Image 1: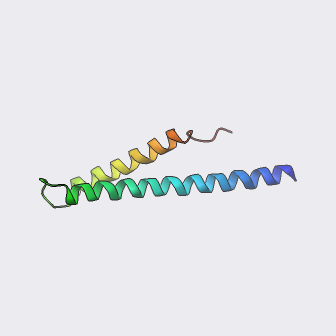
Image 2: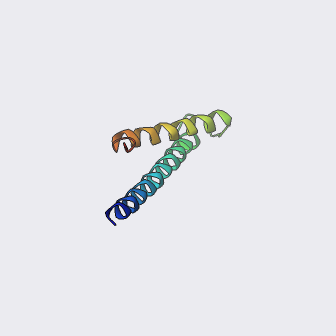
Image 3: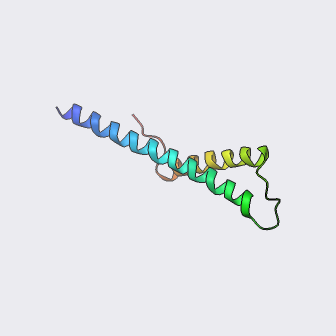
Length: 75
């Protein structure tokens, strides 16, 4: 019974961490795209370079969030 509760708790924690990481990734991408679209002095064009950099910023934000929150759960 205790193992079943522990498994469920671990599953819920993993699901929450996954949701948080997706949210941080999407937030990083959106913030970077907004920067490229509205920062004064830059051409107001979203091109493939801006999209690729925004994806890299999102991945970096996701990685940073994982490090800050304690990394991956150890078995």
